[in-house]
Image 1 (cartoon, helix red, strand yellow):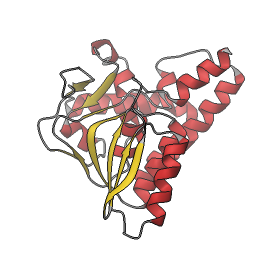
Image 2: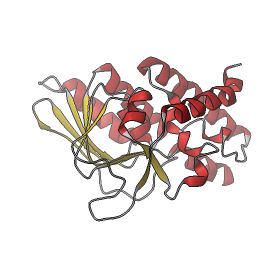
Image 3: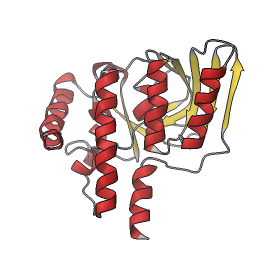
Image 4: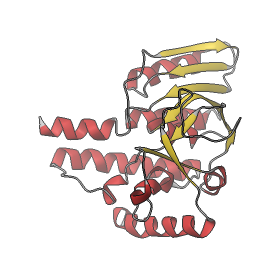
Length: 234
């Protein structure tokens, strides 16, 4: 039972609240709307629409709090393979941010929409937890898949966990964290904000803390992560 609990924490590592029933449909020629968790079932439905549409799909409009990390990696792989533009409607967090925002050649965050991260496969380097053999095996698989994913899309993998690193985690006042537009560009993302960047929902709830990092500070975190994560490669 404890193994199942630990594994579930990792599988849906970043889910914060219960999301409404999924809605995945082709809403206009060339555009698919994806609302819901990044579950295996939802991603399979998205892929089916993507490959079977009579129109060439070029845009994904998404509203997702995240979910299953392996399904999220597959969704991000599809975004990268088909070079889909992404529009964030309301929220893209955790696995959605980790693997969808990072994989797109162009992301538009709608006014008052929120993006944010909550960890990744490297998080246990900074927040250790008990790892029974089955959990350790799953983590190793996740780490290998995530490292390969970020190598392919040419984005800094550290985007997922900078907010959990010493020197910044102590300053957090929200479970979800994000970065200013310039930092996002330096990390390799291609994100445009339709309005002012925010961590607040349209209803006034604080969903994410946005960190503004000077280039020297960001370079420090990237160098630290390279050192700490080297043991996974060697």
